[in-house]
Image (cartoon, rainbow, N blue to C red; front, top):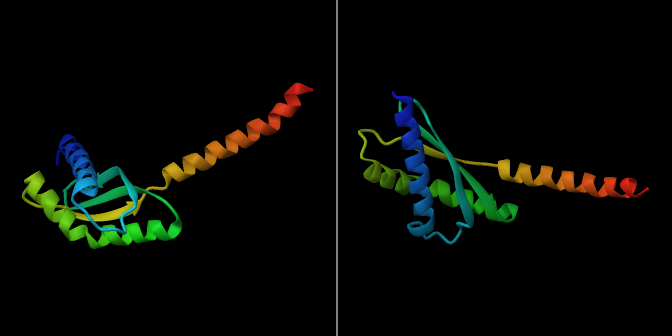
Length: 121
């Protein structure tokens, strides 16, 4: 399969799932969720949708459960909108890169505060 086609489908799925989360899914368990990326296999059979979840741990867990229960609806909608012969099976994974980035930023700020007293001497 063409790598360009796979990338286009990945971007399309990312945009469409993002729109579905905003407009179509009405589950109250869904918190603040952002689709950060999509990875589709070369044969277009499987898609992993990476989501960034915000909130407390129990809210994140409830959001993931709601997403996993909505897989069938999301897959059907993607199939109707994508209009391909075979709709990829989807799975959701939490993208923790934003949490990691915020942790690193906090460490850098802490180091910067600790170095300021040394500069004044």
